[in-house]
Image (cartoon, rainbow, N blue to C red; front, top):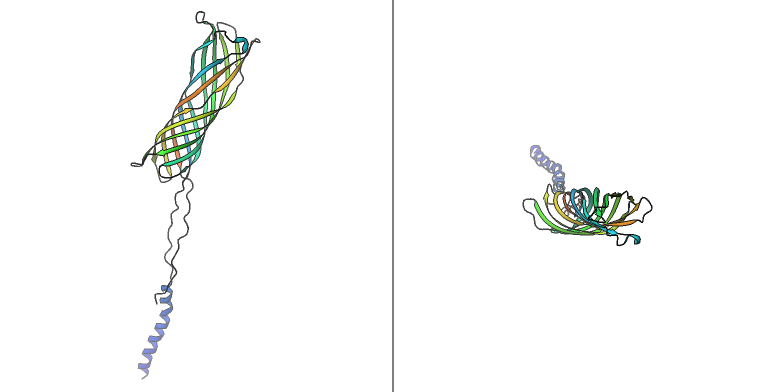
Length: 267
């Protein structure tokens, strides 16, 4: 009798002891999920490049010098380097916008003008142009193939141009003069064509051609010896630029925490 009673009793105690473990296993939460941040539509950009410049020059004589026959027969401008930065937004898979600020480095300008081609008397000029260019841009991405994305774009904005250290030296005369280091705001606009390459999900490199028109600047030369001051318009400033840029998707967004279904017992 004792042996028969002990066996059921031990079995019941074992079941009671194991039941909390089984119930706890029934209610254990799922393993933690590793959630990757979602890419943001915002990006930062930086760019460097070189520009092949062009311009026109107009003589703006003071009233006493009107009709003196002076005309330019030569003018040139050196190439320039530039650096810029900005921020943008990917509207969707094919349309994006950004705003950029760019500094165009000190660039030499030379010109020569004559009063009489027979005698060759005239003036030679040398000065230096620097510019800040501010643009709001829009781009259309034309599809991606093997990480390459060709695009086109256009921009509009303004430029702040400075003509510095302008010197006027007489040719065949003793005349000379110096500019006033003038600066001027002007409208600016640009068109783009290029290709981007995906280095990673958040980093892209761009190789871009840009035509840039960045306005004009007028400077006045005060001549030595008390003669009347004339002005000169360095206008239709334009450049054919080759740029290398980086776009960094800087602002990944953490997704909302996962939602779990209410826990239910399997018992």
